[in-house]
Length: 294
Image (cartoon, rainbow, N blue to C red; front, side, top):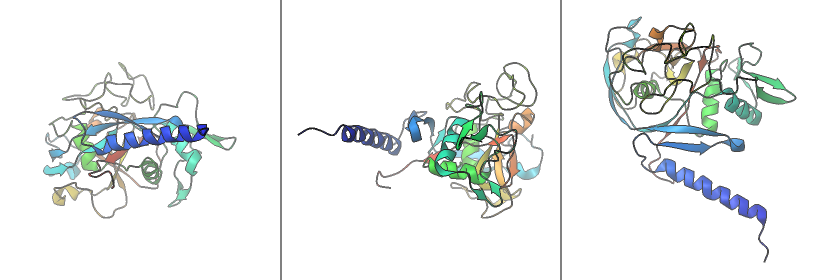
């Protein structure tokens, strides 16, 4: 009997998908990196962050306000985090599949804003020329969350973000170590390797020891948590996820618009979930599954 060529191709794809799924589910090695296939042959790389404990908050007394205090002990489970911020290229692909709905009065992506790196032309969302690998901006928290779900993941909690920026809980004031320079991140101004007035391509600077890029500068990154300037006083110990409600979501990491002090590992910012800004983007987290059937 003649075999169906299309069936053979589909079977090979299914085997590959199963292989990737089982790779994520099994206990990974420290610092392991994998590729997870996305729609239409795109891929995004995830880095494994081993779970552990961390003294979360401003250990150096360098904060601008008391929202980084008190320092408190937290414990997080292991997780996978995207090695870099989500790009215009990937987000355009997402919009082409699901559309750009209005939520809470705002679109997931404000393509009308001139700072947006994506345009709508001939019934397609496409990145602006030269901005394909820049982080997506003018995206709302709703749009970021929807993309994360589309990827089979979620936005990182604030605790997970800080734990990653501090290389699994080390006492690092900046994601780059004891200091941060223009040779290490895209922050306010232009000098050294920082040649951009606004966003720069992801992975333009050296990653941290875990292999995660752009945790300092380029764009602020949405977290899943609601913002509360007093939350640290009553944060839970195990996998804290922020307060139950609020008016704004936490953003972390600083951006091209802010000084290096906003890119400290403990610096906290906020942005309304319906708000879109030219210096706020996001990255994605995937949980470690305990059982392949989950």
